[in-house]
Image (cartoon, rainbow over all chains, first blue to last red; front, side, top):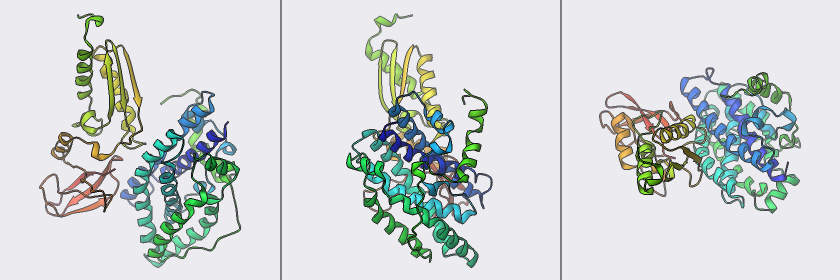
Length: 249
Length: 167
């Protein structure tokens, strides 16, 4: 698989894994409005993942479709950011994870619009419009939880402390990220960081939540290093396609 | 029956266009695909037709249904070779709804998207309740029954209503 195809898989897999995670809330969210909200965000993410996956398959040139890539790859072949695969936990955990990644995708897609790769540019342009709504939704909930009751504040603060170490990967460029940035196919990750910090910092401060200190901890989901949670998630997501090979919707 | 080779290209195009005007959004069955603003190009000549369709939201399940229904409708109106392509650029915007589409939406009970200015609020809100035209409205849920809608309530008549979001 070419470097570019692998890079596109990273974009696809983060959206796909998040979509699957949010989908698991349907029927379980605290209120029907949140059921709808999480499902709608999941649907956008799934659509974005489909566009990225279809393109990765074309770049690879072995005839794999978006469905093949989504349903027939094993966990170690997934290239999502590790933050995306962290378990749903309670509502606060899901919301904080979502907000940190929504804010990231907002910066990423805005920059990717001017990619030298026109196909990536047009997918990003479409995704960027949808991401505005995602950030507003998850950011709004971070504020309500953080600036809510003692219980909700405590849960949001715990989620933030638990998830924060995984945000280092977002801006930690590896050789693939660097080669994509050099070719102007992708933005430099370092250039995305100030915008993300400003957006996240503004919401956290409104939520009366403290930004945790940087941690030495590093985990690279984008290079195929994954925890146990991704295996369970994929087992459920891929069951039907694998149990009934060739099944079509 | 007129032989295909004798049909003028203009006739084929007019027939294809009329066919597309009969294809409705499956979720909002008062808007045809032109009024929804998702047709990016249409080419037709003889028995061939080629249509570019853009999705509204990238994950909207209706997009795939719309592409299938366009293909089926064109085949039913005599085009043997039909190609429906997904076009992403320029991305669809709620500003692509036609004026007729906006009127039909409101008559159907869905408040049309706000007309956004370049600067300021990028989200907008409904101008008035589509039932009683009251302007005192509140958001119940930012997300509604389809990706393109939010749920509002009118404080004047008390009725909930859908709002077609700005994208």
